[in-house]
Length: 88
Image (cartoon, rainbow, N blue to C red):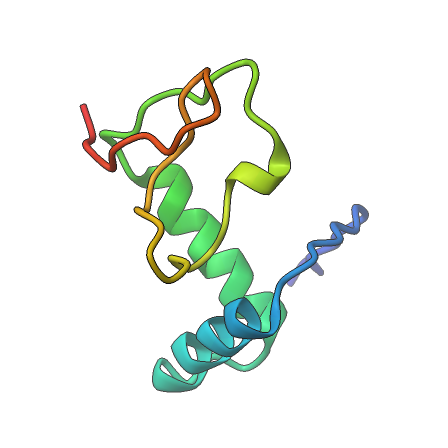
């Protein structure tokens, strides 16, 4: 049986709240590791449909894992204001 190799390392910075959300999701599904949980979430996200393409002017800080209190969930518009979470 062939061995799976993963040559690329990806570093992602998360807030304490985002990490807690990831760990809760992982433990609820009995995932063996954070890395396995992240790979599963990436697979699900890549297979999902109905999401708009990001604005060219968007920045990494415009995207989070969980909603912030009082801030609508969704990508930011070109003028920097939060966009709606409406999906096309």
